[in-house]
Length: 63
Ligand code: FES
Image 1: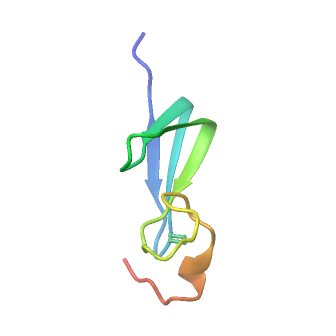
Image 2 (image 1 turned 45 degrees about the horizontal axis):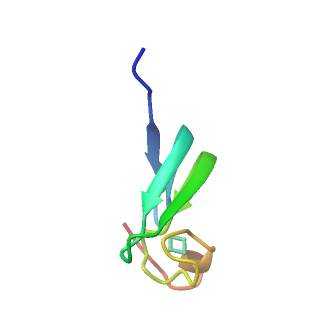
Image 3 (image 1 turned 180 degrees about the horizontal axis):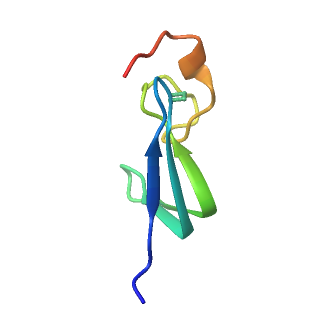
């Protein structure tokens, strides 16, 4: 059975990814694994890139 990955784009905020194992390759080639869910920054202002740290609430990100 194929794995199913759910991605939800939150209005003016992060993208939530849900899967058993989420493998994220960073620009330097480092692999980060998350189990269950991950919140990816879409505003570009998070200090914990590529993950959301809530900063989008302060920078008036709209999309
Ligand atoms: S989307 Fe949350 S900090 Fe960027």
